[in-house]
Structure formats: structure tokens, C-alpha cells
Length: 464
Image 1 (cartoon, helix red, strand yellow):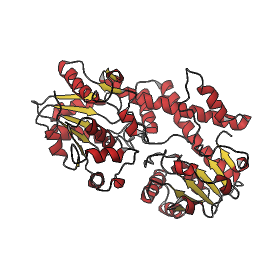
Image 2: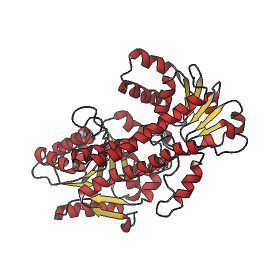
Image 3: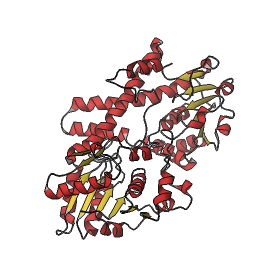
């Protein structure tokens, strides 16, 4: 099958950037990204590229070259499903909040809704591609829905093509991927579908970097990759606690360990803990799958990665409290950075949310500044956490009033007694820390500040 039109359902952090690059590299294919959220689509179509709903370095440039030519953003989902040969599903797969598997299993309601809509609309053969991170055997469920509810004369081929993007470097990752994974069936029509997707990626990705597997291996590969990366972060963070007790230096330890070619240096930097939309959700999903198949010891192993991540966030917040005399009630503490990492406006599961809440719980007043995350998103993140903790309306109102969102790092630093650096934004590296540290304690959770003799006594880093 020669693909002329692609429809991507979901205009978020995966769908938008991925389809923009596909449109750039495949100018003969018309790519349309659809979403039920009209505000999000309007933002993608905004003439001011600074208003795009997703911030990624290089994304605006790619959109400017393709939008209105062969890249489009629309709320007309049915029309674009009907007229496209290939459909990507890039919708959210949150953790279930109720029912079997609540708190661990992936909630597939949006994926299933997509499949039902495709079944209802499709009048010609379609290649349906799982782009969202999904549990093993989700493709089987999608097939069941399409077969039961779709036109019997229409053939649906399901492929798994998980994304391996790192937020902050997503465009770079899309241009030069470590690997592209395509999982499909070994039937004749399944192989044709795989070949159609292979033909698209091979326009810019070397074929030796494109791995063809069965659907189940492809689905599990994404969960496994994220789990392994998160495991490395939790491992080095656990050692940072030991360094503080023994007098070892975590930076020196990380360097020594990373020089072993069998281990390598990546993901061995200590931090306040991992965040983002994938790591926690995917490990919980992996834990649930292991429990489902009776692998309790394996489930316990991976769950410990999450426990260590929570421990690190709590330990950092407690370190601030302890070094301010054990009492922070009424004291102003500045949090620099709300995004879970630099070069993105994504704050999902950011360590800043949990550190801020612990400081508020101890009675502190918290000033927050982030160059890319807006005030309404910061307050929504906190409100969602408070609601999940079943806090009363009065308590939520009280905590919300103790959070001050600053428009600049200068105003955020005014009157504060301590600074907690929670996102490694480049602009924070250029601050005159020697001058700032004369009357403030600095808690460096992201290694923005490198130790120097003039300020060392004022800087508190994990593992030092």
C-alpha cells in the first residue's frame, strides 16, 4: 500500500512533534493531526509559533516549514479517519483510578474510544498504528473492537510503533533516532502494512536502525526501556543517600562507575527524582502485568524503583527543612523550575510538585518561577495532587494561598530564605550564585551549581 494520507489522533506531546517531522521528511504525504480539544488545535494553528501548546527546541521551525502545506491540525476527526490510509493513535493512556488494576494498570478508555470511532467511520482498508505507550496485548483488544464493530468488508491491520522520545530533545530524537520499532503480524497483509510504515521512516532513518518485531515484543519494549532508564536513576539516587552518610562524593562516584564500558555514563547523574508522563506510569503498568501473570517477585523488584524515587523527593524536601533549623513555618522558600526537565513545558509528575507540597505541609510559603510553565498549570498540578490526597476544601484553599507564582527569577528570589533548584534551565546557570548565596541557602537538586570554595558552605546538593 502506498500511503498518501496520514491521520494522527491526539495532538499532544507525541502526536504533534512526531507528525510535524513526518510531514517535513515525507512532503508527498498529507499529514493531519486531529483532536477533540478545540483549544489545543487552535493553539497548533496559531499564527504566532510561540503559542504552540508543546514547547520543544526546533519544533516551531519544523511546523513553520510544513503547516498549511502538507501538515494540518483539525477537530474534524471522522473526515480525516475516512480519507486516510494510515491512522496513528497517540492518545493519553493514564493510570486507572478505579476498577480492576486501579492505581497501576493503564486506562485504555481513550484507546478503545479511538478504535470504536475508527470502526464506525472507516469504509476502506486502514493501517492502525499504536503510538501511545500501551500494555502488552492491547493490539489484540483493538483488533477485537474493529472486527466486532467495523464494516466486515474493511481490513484493519494493527501495528505497534512506540515512541522513544525524550522531552526536551524530541525533535533531535526524531531526526536521528537510536531505533525505530515496528511490530506487526507475520501474515501477508500484516507484512504489507509493516512495509508501508517502513517506507515512511526509511525516508530519513537508516534501515539498519529500523527493527521489525512481532506486535507483543514491540509493545513490551517501550515499557522495558522506560523501566530500565528509571532504574538507573533510582540506583544512583539511592547511592547519593549513602554518600551523604559516608563522606563520599556522588559526582566522583558517578564518574567512576560510568567509566566502566559495561555500564556507561548516561543516566547516572543524581537528581531529585525522575518525572514526566511515562516513567512512573509505565513502571506501574509493568508491575501490574507482572502481578497479573503471577510474577510477584518481579513486580516487587520494579515497584522498588518507584519507592526509591519517592524517597529521593521527600529526602530533598526534608533536607531543606532540616537546614533551615527544622522549622519553616512562615518562611519564604523559592522553587526555581517547575517543568520535570529543561527544554519542555511538561510538568507531569515533576519533582517540584511533591517538594513544594511537602514544604507547604510544613507551613512554608513557596515562591515558584519557571520560564515555560504557566501559572494555571502550576496551580492545577498542585490541586490535582491535593485532591488525590483527599485534602479538605479549606486546606486546599490555605495551601493555594501560600503559593506565589513569580513572573521572573528576580522577583522569585526577593525575600526568600532558601532556593531550591528543581529544573536545570540554562538561565539558572548564569545567575551570580556567589552574590546570592551570601544571604540565602541554596539547595541544588539538579546540579546547576558546581561547587566552588567561596560558596560551598551555602550550597546543599544531594550526595554532598
